[in-house]
Length: 203
Image 1 (tube, rainbow, N blue to C red):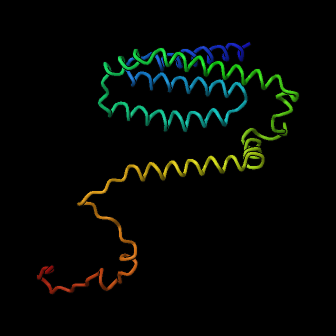
Image 2: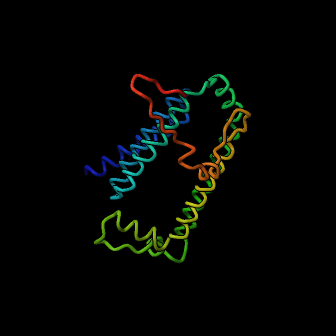
Image 3: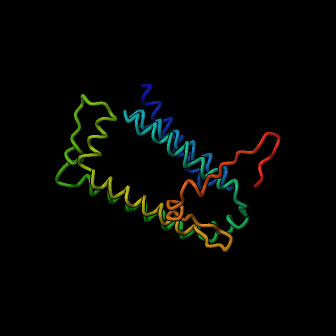
């Protein structure tokens, strides 16, 4: 009974928080509602027995991504009047895209349940005596290893692209010369001085 009440509590709060994310006029408030939605989603993961995913959601998304969003939104000079006018202007397109996305989700769920093989048979076999984290690691690094590696490669390319796009060529910038640093000898970098007593060092 307590588990059912907790599920409905987390589910209702998660839906309400997600609604407030897109309904709030202040972007800072939207990020705070997003953090609350993440916490409620983590509670649902705990009820499902996936405590690793719950802690991962809190540590990665709440502790890093959402806080980064909050800092970026607070540091930017956001014109709220322009945001509201743009929202009203593109409201029909947003409703149309939301309806299309909802139709795709319904079609995907219907096609998944209508297959010849049930969802339980399509799932990866997991031993019941293994801990949650160990079972997830065995499935991730065996059956889905190639997909996991491709995802890491995509993130690496995105990181390199972001670094390249943010680089600016300026006249006063000094680039690092690795070859010149490797050719430099200790005799050229260090000068030993032995001044007499009461005499300073002459540069």
